[in-house]
Structure formats: C-alpha cells, structure tokens
Length: 294
Ligand code: BEZ
Ligand code: FE
Image (tube, rainbow, N blue to C red; front, top):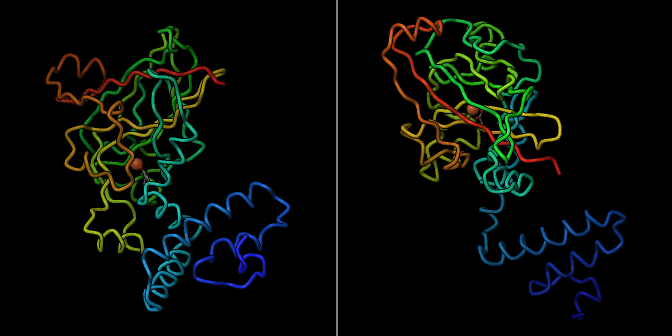
C-alpha cells in the first residue's frame, strides 16, 4: 500500500486507489466491486484525456441536460446507453445462447405490455396506411421440433416511421401491434405494413451528441418481436430489412446478420386476395429457434 492510500490523502498518481480504499466498509459486496471497477476505469480515462476545467464542466452540463430531458415517456439516459453501444453489450452478456438459437437485440422504448391478442392471419395495421406486408414463419426448438402455443408479441412503426404511442390521436391506439400464438405445426402468420427507417428521438442532448460525432440518428427498417414459450428462453428481437439505406449504421447497434429478413415484393392478385391484402404486397419469412430455458 502506498503512503497516500494508507493516509487517505489524495494524489494524482494514486487517485483511484485512494477513492477505492475509502469504500472498504461498503455493506453490499457487489456495489463495492462495481465501484472499484468504475473508479479504476474512470480515473484512467480522466488521466488519459486530461480535461480542462471547461471540458469537465461541459460533460457535467451534458449529463444535467440528459437528466432534464427524461420524463414519463422519454428516457434520455437509456438512449445514451443505446448510442454508446452499452445497451447492446448488456443484452449480449445476458442473452448468450447456443449456436442456432435466435439472437436477441434491443427492446427499445416503444413496447406496450397489453397489445391485442389476435388470430393468425390478423392485420395489425388498423388505419390501412402503408404498403401491405405478409409476415410468416415457424417457432421451433434447437432440434427442429415445432413449438405449439409460443406467444409472439409484435410491434412496428408505420410507413412514416412513427409508433402509435408517438402519434396519439393521429394513429389508432394499438396500431401495428398484436400478440399471436404459434399453431400445432409451430407456424405463425400475420399482416402488417412494410416498415421504414426512422430516427431515434434526436431533439435532445443525445441527438446533439450524435450530430457532433457525424452520426445519423436513424434505425434501419425493422419489426419487433418478443417470443416466449414455457420452458424456453424468451427472445426479444427484430427482423431487419437488409435493403434499408441505414442497415450498416443503426444508431443503436441493434443489427445482427442472423436477423436480416428477405423482403420480397409479390405481384400475384390471386394470392393477395387469398391473404386479404392489396396487390402487390411484400412477403417476409422469419423462422424462430428457441433454446431451452436454463
Ligand atoms: C426501437 O427500435 O424502437 C428503438 C430502440 C432504441 C432506441 C430507440 C428506439
Ligand atoms: Fe423500433
């Protein structure tokens, strides 16, 4: 132990050790461990950056503005975590799965817990806007056995790039949301609209930061899913459109290769009418593989 750590006096060289030694009596061991790591890395960063007092205060003001931007509907700190790649990293750490199982991605802030439960084939588009899309696939286990009764909670933005909760009074309530159940063959199918890219909320400090970093606020077109079945690991994920202009620059790093769908335009009036869609329509298949819950 160096002299400054033992005395509790602060020096530039021993800064992190002095602070950590002061936390020695913390009751909660996990908190103590987390603070040791945070203190070590934060002090290391400050030593490498050598901020001026003005730069330090700018950082304080940024965090203050981030806090002031939060309300019941807006969580600017989560958005900050998203654009720093931290949300995806935490998700990756907590959703490690065997090869072949469907991968997770970010939940995002627009999920509602009580979407309407619908029959397979139902249309989640409640205002008739947008290019029709037929979504279908299967839910199976890692051995290829169909899973019956899996719950698929799906939601998406409209073709202007807004979720219903962002356009109250403009879009019908629960527009582009529904809960489906896989059938005896593990199959599910529903109708929606072709999604479009949209910006994450970018009129606050996080949007300003992205601008200063030369980054776009856009998320590539996607549909959200939460798939759950008894005895299996719940999957929170998306299907992405690989032809989207922002597919390689998702503002929140949510894209994974295994989650790229194939959006095919179908021009077949008979099939469209069988499905209850206008011709032409888009078709995307998304097959899900669930891993056993461990
Ligand atoms: C979303 O996909 O809904 C989303 C995810 C992260 C931040 C903002 C939106
Ligand atoms: Fe989204």
